[in-house]
Image (cartoon, rainbow, N blue to C red; front, top):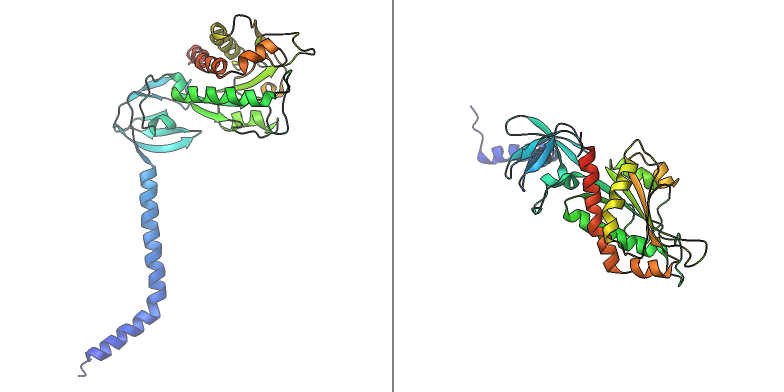
Length: 300
């Protein structure tokens, strides 16, 4: 009986490795990739609540019926993701919907409210090649709509709100695309910021809150916001109230939508108010209370 020498065995091993080395590397690579992908996906489907008392709902959305709150440290399995919301399975095996941005949040909020669970689209009117109206000293409307919207954005985010800007730089967004943003992002509210202009300089003054639809809550939203900002506006700037406005960004909007004209840009008196950071911040501070009131009145 022939006995194989070590040299013969080694030669056989070398032949086998040379024959199967490439397929073996491929298999090992695929296995490693599969393990890493599975680990990543499993991790992505798990989340631990990092702040206390996060509200949960029986359906997706801030206005859906409530189903209690989540405790800090609670472990959740994510079953579905839709429009920033998560359908989750809790530790007791019950299912619920929760605002994903609150579950992922690491910094506590001073107060959790319906506004914390809302998605709001802010539209700084005009931009880019569309300068909007001009002041008596050739200042562009687009500059001040963006300044105001950014202050409102910061204030809403401090409440935990998910905020989407139609623009955050000096760029033009096609008018028909603006209401589509609110629809695609499943926004709860839409606010467009503008400054009015009169046919003659210094012939008009004041602020107006416009709506188009009545059945989807837009008129109620306009009323709530107008009431909220009124005490913070200058005494010499008249409140022209809530009015119907046939604007495309309102007419083509499927979510509650309003357009705020925050003074007349070709009124020196109004312009000297709204060009200041102080005026803009006052609106930013007051506006969330109007949104909060609207949400409270429309909860299911």
